[in-house]
Image (cartoon, rainbow, N blue to C red; front, top):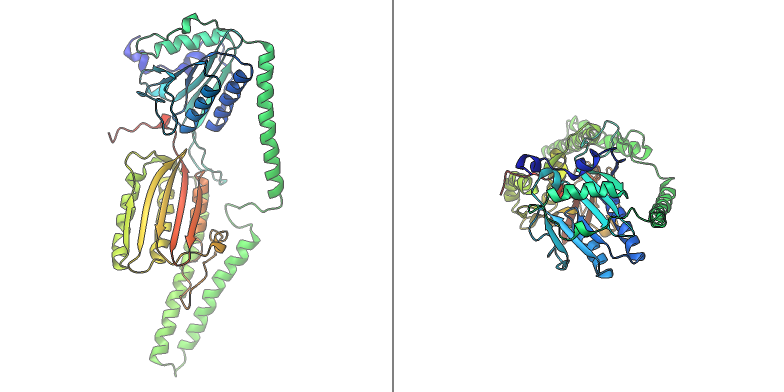
Length: 461
């Protein structure tokens, strides 16, 4: 096979272009994993000893599933296909040394594909999926970002499976897959197919019951309106936030008109006017930021090692002025996330701003990141005044401010963390906080890792 054909090789396309295309379905990686686990569980329950060829998404959890099956059916022959050297031989806590590796050619299309092929005289099937980038935008209705998805096909037909195997041979540099040619590809007994569909229906039914329970619990709760204009609670709080500064400013202005006012009093009232103007400006700015969440925004592949240093350097002069130690640790080659860059920047900036605002001199503010399972975690910690754990459930509410200590003035509009939470959720992530009064706070943002199969990075070695 010549190099140009290899560079365009796609097992998904080979299967779909051979005769009548198979019905395809758009699914998430979680659904694909569920389908694979269902098939493996059926094979285990029926005490079959098949030959299995698998190319899994580059994920620790998938390797855990393969290991679990391997331990329960040690006699099964499992071929682990990958274009990465020694893939699966050692991945974290997962040792898969007894798997038979098959090295595939390096190919951008093949890289985006994953499959499970079960071959036996009693039952054979093929699950084949290809990563798609998706329409990574936010619609005007406020719909969240659509994360990358998989296009999947499924077949029991020996002829289709044979077409797939022939294509797979072309993806192997030495064009040989041991013992595969000797295997009889069976279409599968109708009873086994029935068992398979029954198991999948049981899983769907279980998920539906869980969904119904969640729906029932939240049926009486008002959903968050993206324009925020339909929430009575929000409107009431907004009126209070706008009314309070106006009342204070009117009072200060009337007192400034008095001829008997002393210089010290004048300065105090002028300071009050300045503070209340800033407070009202914060409310208006926060409202505009919330309303802009409905605007259409394109997502990007973002590497934290390229984003965080610039943000931290921008805040370094402020940290020096306040005598606060500011630093960061972002590992090189940390997996990227898919998110609008301005959104991710705003998340970090807002949390960094809060930490610097509530951390006293000689304190410390630090930004770090790491990968955990299928997520990248961004952690912003400080040694500031901290937050009472009783307030954890409220700090992301609109206009909520943590309790003041002594006579310290009201700071901000109470919308910063609300905006951060909304941005995180729209990127299909989550945010959490851990804090102790007088000890500091730790905010953690978890964002889904972009599937490695969709990453084409040439800017760095």
